[in-house]
Amino acid sequence: MKLSISKMGKSARIIGKRKFCGLSSRKQHQLLSSLANEVLSGWKYNDFLLRYEELHSWINLDRYSPPPWLNEHESIMEYFIFHKFRGGMLEQNEKVSGKTISWEPVYNVNIVLDQIRSPFNVGSILRIIDNFGFNSLTHGTSWLRIDHPQLCKAARGCEKWIPVNYEENLISYLEKSEVPVIGIENDDDSVSIDNWHPPENCFIVLGNESYGISSEIRNLCMEKVKIPMFGFKGSMNVHHALVCAARKIVEYHRKV
Image 1 (cartoon, rainbow, N blue to C red):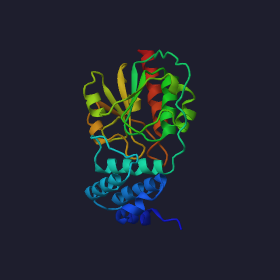
Image 2: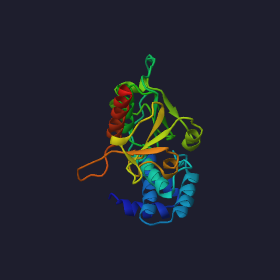
Image 3: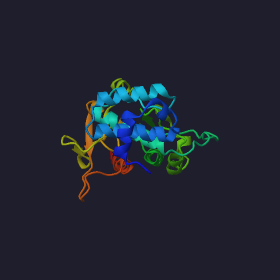
Image 4: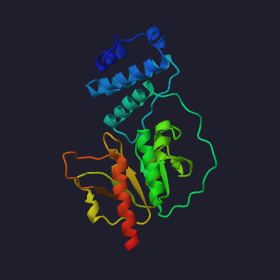
């Protein structure tokens, strides 16, 4: 009988070493995802960390280590999604091969991803970088696979020539930057995209699909930009938001 997420979470809290080690890696990931879900349902975060370490001490399994800039809620969301993804992941394909195309950007705009986890979204963002002639993509997600089938399908080959950089500590990376950091975020103190004057050289930060840009990185943003919306939804897909910002950047710098 298939267990519900809540029952799986309770099972993950009490399961013994012998039984846990006897599960398939996919099932182990599902239990770890459900264990993280227990925190979302009210279990203490520190208790989760202790149990998470104990379970991993029994096995050799892919694990998630949250970057230091995420708060507890953001971290547990990433634990949950990481193991949920691993629990139903496709077989890994061979590395992307082929001749590398030399990329010559038109605009010195660098896109930064803060814990965006969807391979499809990352692939779509790479294609947008190509469409608008932006510089590169930087991310801080250690388990992001540029050769993931969904990413490659959405990128349509752009993953082969758009420079993609992994930075273990995005906070330090952005702090050391000498160019403006702009967050696309619908905060109360954000400027409307209609009144935004985008700098010619900048970092554009896009946030997580669930909670947006993490609080620590929001604090590093020189400016935050929001996109007016008029329907029932108060948010839009991250790559749609990038298209709006990208079009504004191109139109603005063609006029000045």
